[in-house]
Image 1 (cartoon, rainbow over the protein chains, first blue to last red):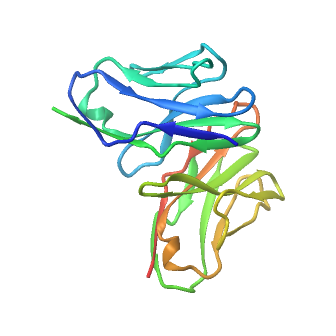
Image 2 (image 1 turned 90 degrees about the horizontal axis):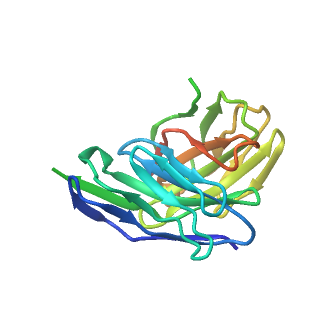
Length: 110
Length: 113
């Protein structure tokens, strides 16, 4: 079956630090990969996506590259801001079903 | 504005008192789904629907019912709520054409005493 494993949190960084949140997946076939972000008190919203191998998704300074050889989709940002504090979910979509990681809580301190 | 709307956003109820959480989307999406979010367990799928009158169980369907009589609506029914159903619930929808990107509602926090 499908599964998503992402870096356990919580992660605490200072403003302008570099962020990496690791995500690896298990799936048959060719899944689409997603990062969703959940700000406090809100629902999840799409941050970025990649639909095939070697695609790079990017949005709001965040990036992730679909690596089929390592079955990974790590989220990165070069300089985080306090407003990036949120819970980040890695997810895959395969054969009509979405599977989510457990979420990683990021706190950015001024 | 494209959105998924859930109601109520917050509810405190007692064991055994039937309740319904409504979900409506205005994007003409075929696919709709319910998830629950619990600390340390991430998001778990309860039920989903591929289209009108087509529903199926997700990973944790016990204690829940759904219906899909209209394309825009996908209510979640708790016939006899129990304390272990205290959770944060999310409805989501997706178009059959957009490779699985989900649009989420803002969530419904349910407490069962």
